[in-house]
Image 1 (cartoon, rainbow, N blue to C red):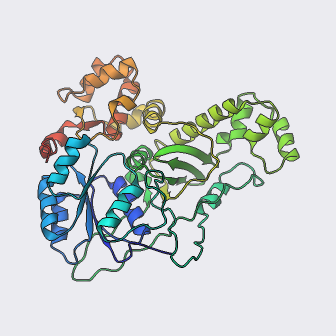
Image 2: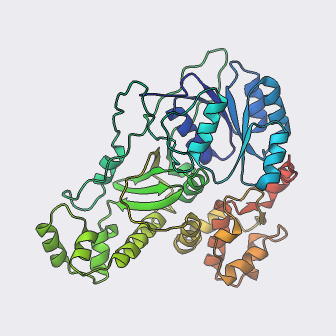
Image 3: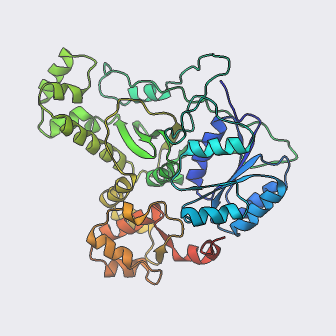
Amino acid sequence: MLRPLAGKRLLLVVEDTTLAEVLAEAASRLGAEVDLQATGRGALSALRLPPLAHAAIVDLPLADIRGREVIGAMRAAGVPVIGISGAFRGPRAAGEVLRLGAADFFEKPFSVLSLMARAARLMGSALPGLPDPEDEVTGATPLAPASGRTIPSEPFLEMALKEVEEPSHAPPIPSLAGPLPSAAPAPRSPAAPRAAPPGRQGDLAQTSMPRLLVALHQAQANGALTLTRGAVKKILLLEKGAPVYAASNVAAERFGAICIRRGLVAAEALEALKAASPGVRAGELLVQAGLLSANGRTDLVRAQVRAITWSTFEWSEGRYDFQLARVPSGLLQLGLSMADLLLEGMVRASTLPRLIIDLPAEFHLAPAVDPAFELYALGLRPGEAHLLSLCDGTKSVLDLVALSRLPERESLAFLQALRVMRVLDDVARILIDTERIGFM
């Protein structure tokens, strides 16, 4: 398997742990050795430890020091820098970052493949055989071998989905187009220890499903997010950072069960249709039988994806595994928005006891410096827009709930959703990180 970044060292300076995991996974799967730092001072320390990185990706603004210091130090050390940011936008912001010495600049959300392709060029390499990065947003796209050898497929997604699909005789999901295998970074010299790149797996006790989705949206990632809790297993497929398919091994969340509950078909009739046409999916059978329209099927699948996703929002135990890969072809075009999925899901699914723990009454909230979603993408209801307008940093969560036109649980859920989506931030954090507000 060709690994075009083998022997290259990439320094990632990214505070958001989940986003850092996605970028580190994409780089390491392409063969790069990844050094992950969460702060500007950590990045400066890394520059003092040989061997130097061949390139760096820096998330601006930094929490502890000004970005100009880090970019300047890297430029002096001969390490080309790519700046990424959700706070600084537009040609003027890009021009300023480039003026400070960065080689390129990407606004969030961005294509992780485009970012890695640019980093590869800065490191004197390339990602050969790839389609236009604007059309492919997966860090796991197979690379064309120079020798003409075929690249074996890794059908991890097909196998995983079989475990949660409805009947065992259902047709398999088309296999992926051969994602690159995960590879451990090359060993470092004992004299120059660095932070190891994070894995793509993790414990839900240390994060949450909504936070994972925010990071995957920012990276515009393609792939499969698998969540397991005990015997329960659920999978969400994403394309360009948006959900396109979901599966669950919970019987009530399967498509046929949903249709039966909604009175579209009797259980005995559905079983008869399956017996007559083995290997055909329930949705296709119902459309063929005239019991469901094509548009009705899409609406039901869209509702199924939302319900499966929302059911995991408050999981505080279990494991997650995100695998960068190209999603199978032939999926229904659902047109789901990640912003809508997160905001509506948290408002619907969040429970008051959990909200009281996650969002203390004494917190003060204000607009975030680097929002993951623009306000126009949120589709706010009048009561939500009013509550957001009150979040100016002068009022506590207790004050905001008292002034809100929404019920207590809905108010808390909305505020917590905007915190997770990085539209709102804690005032204490903003005051500590005042350098974020100044441009560089």
